[in-house]
Structures are given as C-alpha cells and as structure tokens.
Amino acid sequence: MIPEGQSLLTSCLPVRQLLARIGDKWSVLIVMALCDGPRRFNEIKRDIGTISQRMLTLTLRGMERDGLVLRTVTPTNPPRVDYELTALGQSLRAPLQELGQWAIDHEAAINLAQQDYDLRQGSA
Amino acid sequence: MIPEGQSLLTSCLPVRQLLARIGDKWSVLIVMALCDGPRRFNEIKRDIGTISQRMLTLTLRGMERDGLVLRTVTPTNPPRVDYELTALGQSLRAPLQELGQWAIDHEAAINLAQQDYDLRQGSA
DNA sequence: CTGGATCCTAGGCGATACTG
DNA sequence: CAGTATCGCCTAGGATCCAG
Image (cartoon, rainbow over all chains, first blue to last red; front, side):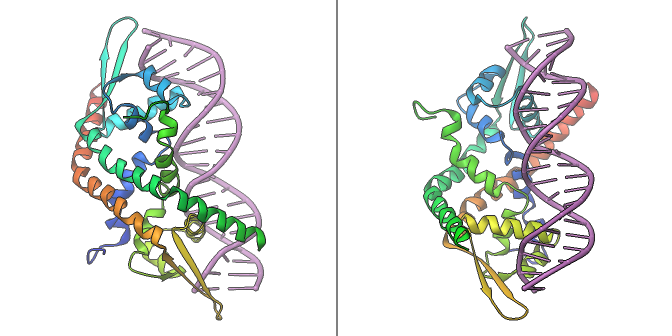
C-alpha cells in the first residue's frame, strides 16, 4: 500500500497538507459559495451567515495564496472586491463532492455507531 | 447548485462534520496505518512515529466511537490491544484516495501560486 | 504494553472597534 | 464596502508522570 522506502508520514504528506488547508472551519463553505461564479465580499459573508469578518478575510487570503481563489479589486468608491474560484479551485469541487457523498451515504451509520458507543459507555 | 430552501450551512453539513472528524492532524494517518489489517497500539505509534501517546489514544477513541475503527482487547499480561478498520472505515479509503490524488496532481501548482503570491507581497 | 491524569503552550476563532 | 487591529477565550495537542 505504501511505496517501498517511504514512511507513512511522507506518503501521506500531500493529503495532510491539503487537509491543513481545507480542513479548517470555513474553506469548504467558501468553495461552495463561489461555485456559481464571482461574488463580492459581503455577499459571501451573508451567504455563510455565521462567519466573522475576520475569518472570512483570513480564509480568503489563504485560499488566494494557494491559488484556489482569485481576488479582483475595482477601485470605485466605495470599493468593490470580487472573489471567484480559479481553475484550480474549481477542480477541487469534484473530490470534495465525493467526500460529501460519502458523508451523506454513511451519516446514519456513523450516528448509530456513536449511539451504540455512548450507550456502552453509560452502562460501563 | 444548492437545493432550494437550503442554506449553505445545512447543505454542507455532512462534509463539514466529516472534516471535523478526519480533518484533524492524525486520523488520515491512522486510516492508512490500518489499511493492511489489524495492528497493535504501539505498532501504530511506531509507524506514525511523531504522534504522542495521548493523541493516538484520543484519536483512536474518536474513530472507534464513529464506527471507523474496531478495538479488540486480549486480556493477557501484558495486555494486547488490536485496532482494525471496520467496513465503514475501509469505505473511507476510496474518497480519501481521490483527495490524495488531487493533492498530488496539483501540489506543484499550489506551490507555484504560493511563491507568486509571496513575491507580490514582498514587492508591495 | 496500554492507557489514564495532569499541566502547559500555540494557535484558531469570535467580538468589537477603527479606517480609507 | 472591505478591510485592519486588538483583545480574550477556548481547544488541539505535546510532555510527563502514574497505573493495571
């Protein structure tokens, strides 16, 4: 399963780095918010609803740095800033969708397992 | 893209819950460590190498509660405890593999984007 | 060998106030 | 409108020691 001469750590490095990026609280929501085209800062904020101004800024910056998001400033007054997914960001949607499908397919099983586990703990 | 009458928050809930589970620092490594069959506590610890005893215990507990991992105790002296992926845990490997492939395929592009971004920051 | 209990620190994140 | 700056909380996670 793991290539010869490779440790678990190095062979999983790409996945782990990716999860370090999009495994946070907001990145996935931003990808989804942008999947229908460019949106302005406050539009995204309203769409997500519970994200703080600070975290929206920080997360967008990070995704811009990773090349997932493109930021376009129109220096009007007041200023207008649009965000959109790059080709790279768009390509993330597929594997993310897979993961989402798995989550939906097995949500019930997971909840059941948790109830089982918690019951056994309570009785122990 | 998003079903009518659904918010971004609710439509992404399954993915976000899943990421809350496996988006942490160690879960993916544990899945990989167990993909060739049952392993003992300290074997996993050695395989991963940099995980603390505490986090291995905690992460395994969490995955056991979620039904991803099965824990089997053999009450010898000293005790022997084996961990293995359940069917549910095995089924996670496919979408995880997809994600890993995406990460590998686009690793270079991401690094390039970061360098670009950092350069533009430095010159600004 | 397996893991619990405790202490400690870095960092994620929210709330709020301020700026161009 | 789109941020930046500052504060403070809370939790993830490491180190260490103890126990069955």
